[in-house]
Length: 456
Image 1 (spheres, rainbow, N blue to C red):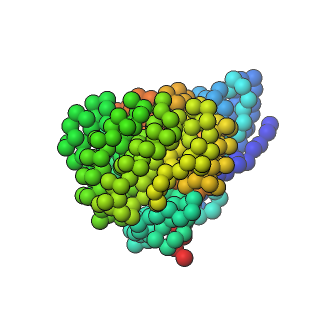
Image 2: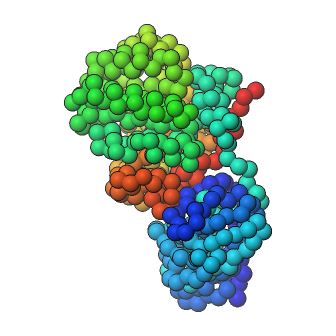
Image 3: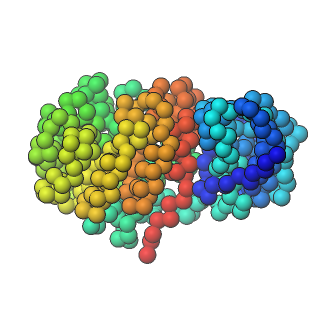
């Protein structure tokens, strides 16, 4: 018989609440989980899980954790309603043990199967709060200030994005999918969840130009973008206005459209502190010189109306600083855009873009102000399985370098990169663990941890 004490995560708010019958579950503020393998045999095992509530009383609870090996499965559980989706496991309290007073414990367990190894799970959560063995500080209240309240109008200082206190900051948030396809995903309920439950700092508004986008209805799409800017502002989030050019890859194809669009949105939003402009999503099949020329014609249009806003410039090779075209950051370092208060976009998809891309970002971050305005946890197609190891390596690097990011996507698209399961946007729940995909659960766990923006 072997006994294991679970290695517990130190991050906060990993999985949201599953829907519970009966009394409404409330957020936990501290918990401990002891995980024990009572017995193990060929291809199977029995595990016990002891939950201790260290914080305020809860009237209903959901335990969440991730199986570290793809072959590990819950077969049958007791003292809770057990479910598993991919590697994510949840256990919802029964009627007779759903209430947990401060200091109370409950014992649950399950039999499981495995096909490879049987490592112990980690990162247990109770009602979405990481079980670290201590009481978690409560999340900020409105009086603590929103990201925009705290940071004000942003600007570029050196290679950093800086706030109104001239201190480097990192923004973390989500990108919409194409507004022409997933407009139903962006409403009062979903934006409330993003700001309050996900505790996101920003919303990237991906307005496709082609593919039934802006070119089909310039006034309509401009209005939709402005509406989402207002919704982000009302919730204290930054809004990245993304002129989402993809096909054709030369942004100069849309130069006149870009000038018209950005003249309009810059004039309309110039008085806001929360707006960042991204002028070309993913240039591809085109030289850096052509991208630079485009930028130097569009930036003055924005500056004429909004002289102080941060502007993000796309880079060659699908905004990879040229790496996907066999180049590197030197072409931008040696021939930068002739403008101030700008940043350069870097995009990656964790399952496709790994060590060579991370090495480029590590080098470039000391020479160029970078903003990861789009990335995915899956392959460059937007689909496939989540590469948790590469995604975590990327997020750790971005945190270390204080590089801001927006994840693709805050949508219920039927693809691995989507944060929500298909059909979620037909309902009103954008917070519960039951609506999240593996990618969504991972990103929510990272974004919802405290920002600790510097103010002095």
